[in-house]
Length: 88
Image (cartoon, rainbow, N blue to C red; front, top):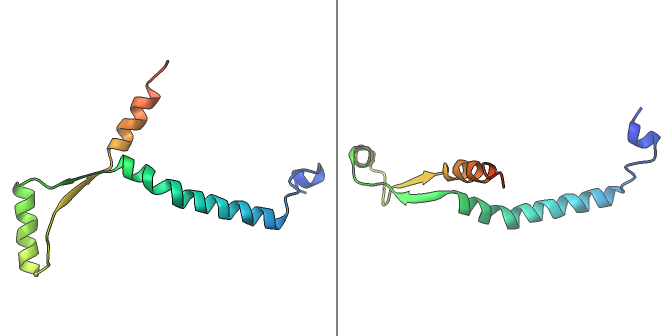
């Protein structure tokens, strides 16, 4: 016994369901990457002990390493907390 069917709700056609799903996927592909790019910060790894260890590992494995980057996703948490703390 389905409540929506008993009372006449949810009479969406199958083709309409698939059309809405395709629209959602297209929107996620178009809107998603710019939002992710705005949240993730990529900086070059500074010279230090960690960089030296990674470069030594690179040379011992003969892996062609050209640049080292740090990907910082913590900006997202900062943006969310700063937006939610605004009680205006």
